[in-house]
View 1 (cartoon, rainbow, N blue to C red):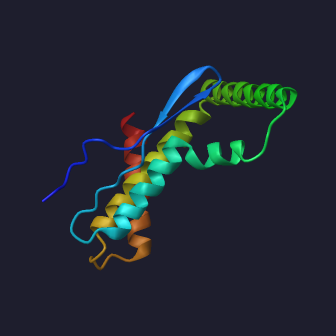
View 2: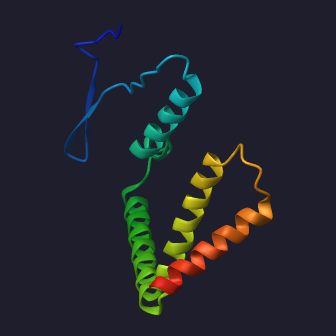
Length: 138
């Protein structure tokens, strides 16, 4: 049976003239899935960028330093976007995406075939054959 909390405590404060409402993180654990719960908690913390915010707020940042940091971050984003654009035009982007997809599929296939008696060499040869078959069909 699951208990529901109606009035969760929340914390409100002003940040850069914006109202920020914080509520506690909640992860529900099912039947002994403690490690899955911890994993989910870590992913939520990372998605919400909680640790990076804590590190940023740990020390006072002068307005000039803040401007400099924001300019640097914007320049890094622009450089990353330019790099991706160059990769797309050269065709390298599609190759990388295919490689990532094959890696994901291999991981899933290996997980499903964990109990099978296929040797590592046989698995790799099957993956290469599948990759070549896909490229021939395109």
